Length: 91
Image (cartoon, rainbow, N blue to C red; front, side):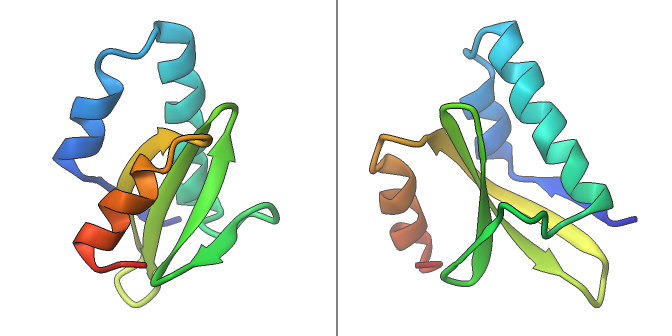
């Protein structure tokens, strides 16, 4: 099982979401601890992305340390997530 590290900005972004959406995304993030590369993940830049309903989760897997780093969460139809990743130098 992998450890989970979630960036502060992700927690800040998730705060205003309705409880149902928050639980959906949180469940998907916690599932990454058991299987960091599920069958529906896509390799993007230096990390991976998975979809959770209308939202996209971008993360990096460190296999040596066995850590999943959740870096960005955002709407799937919003290009903002990729703008953030470009600013971070990950895509």
